[in-house]
Length: 228
Image 1: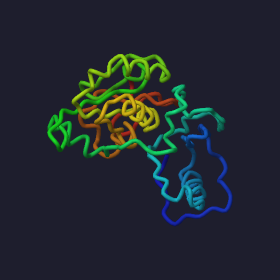
Image 2: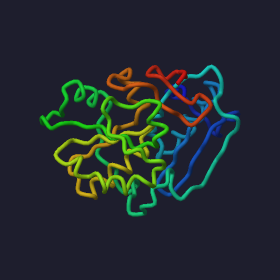
Image 3: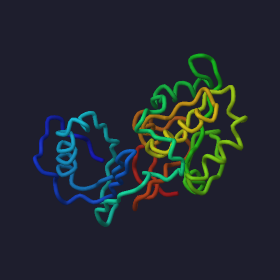
């Protein structure tokens, strides 16, 4: 999403946008593309609602619109985990920001001296496009496989600070909540996911690119489309 325009206002939502909007009880996820003025106007229109006043969209630029149409879906979960007790809307999982994680990975430990491991919560084919160096990857084929994999491997995580990560911050938040409920004490989500990490750190400690679910397919650390 191109940058926001501070102070912009719109009484009606702008037209001409394409992309995907997912609506669920647990939240809203959207990825839209269009002319910069239209995107800025849409964000300003959302911010007129106090519930979205603190909206902080992740930003990337593209030479073309990477979507063919605007699609709005009502879903039971934004990304299906099949664990109704995991409710991010009831309370967010603790998070670590991108710059702090990069600093921890530089040192090999967190500020308390505890070993830090990164846990990829994405599907195996996404991981194959790129991941944090040395990240734990359980080769899941869909996110609903994550709970069983976590329970089977939780001893691997004990005694470490575990940072779960995903593309934009949805799967890794639900994963962090699940892991904490499964008895892993030191679990944090990467705030904003890989895309925010790229934006704020330039991709230090990340190998390869990030798979995205649009026509660009893969973004590099500069948030530009890149060949696999």
